[in-house]
Image 1 (spheres, rainbow over the protein chains, first blue to last red):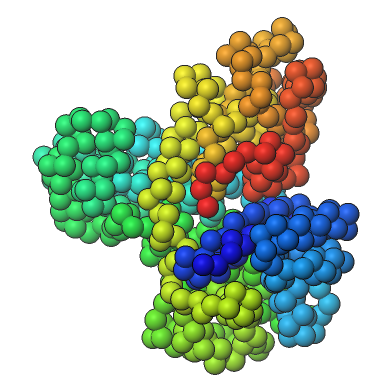
Image 2 (image 1 turned 90 degrees about the vertical axis):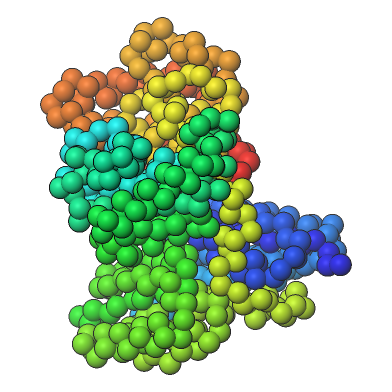
Length: 274
Length: 274
């Protein structure tokens, strides 16, 4: 039995990079009872000293040295953290030196570079993409559909909305989504408003058993959520997409990040933001 | 004049971690003309060998060794990439060994751990949070507002919607948003539907000049977008929030990630997903 350990993900900014990398490293140790704590905005020596005290205290209480995984741009702040009684891995400091050697340049060690330069442009593209996704969710409007970078199609509740929103937020991609419904299956053709958008269509599908679960959370016991109906809709939607030559992905075992990234990659979309 | 260099962000999964860390490292080298390329899903030796050929070709064409920043779990795939004529930094392999020593355990080196275990639960929480944000955008519904983890308030177009969506996608937090409008300023009190939610309210504000730009993109030349009106609304909204004891953040120079993370942190919200 291993003692419980705390893993601190520390950053001078949002901590999102540190926690993503740190979490992914820790998932490689099966069954270890980690307690994960993200600590953003550690951007002064004072805050760093306070955090060191917290880390040391946690180590004493748990009887196991904490892990500290950080992305700290400021060398002074990183040096202070390195003084904690912990296993300290600084993802930023570890890699900035080999990059300096390779490039023959000193880095600026300035906190907050990541977002500063392109903020206004990125912000604008993201807002436009989010507005687009929200204005074109679930086939609610077919206006300006020509401005879409992508139109996701698939049965109701297969994951179109979160995928569109993630594409908008992470990549600035303007993604609409349009449900495939029983009347499309009866006609065995795409809704008229999509017929001229063939090059922009991408499909999502889902295992009928999973679809049944998701729909039952929304409308328990309905015909809509019934397994036979889910099987019918998924089978017909897949047949329609194959007939129309629309590539599609199964969302059942994929995270929203994986869906968005796979589509960006497979459909060779240009991201609009970094 | 430095030659242009390509930086490859390589991953066996989505590449999001590699590109976030890599991009943040590169922004430390002012004015260097990097070309950033994300290469996700490099999960077989064959794909790795193909990529090595691409990397080497790029180096020859540009006359400068490419940079390769990766998060590769599979040691064989990483070893192949290390054979490229490039400056190679593997964020995963670099840190997994010190972690193994610290923990006294071998890691599983299994690709795809990050999302596997909690997929279904996380997916559910995210979907619920996204549905909540979309169903409670811009004060569109006050139903179930008690289920909100957070209600963002502020003038129209100050950044409430993207912040709510980011909180939903990244943290599974259920965030509603509600606009403060001229009739609230005339009464100098909160809308009645918010008065019982005081502990959940958080404010956003924005510099009037920036608000004018944003509103002009939406409704050019309108009274709504006029500078004097933007100045009035921002001043009144800030006065109202101060009067009601609502903490608020200025969105003008912050990215959506920074806004979401700062609010999560300051309002001590519990994230629902990892």
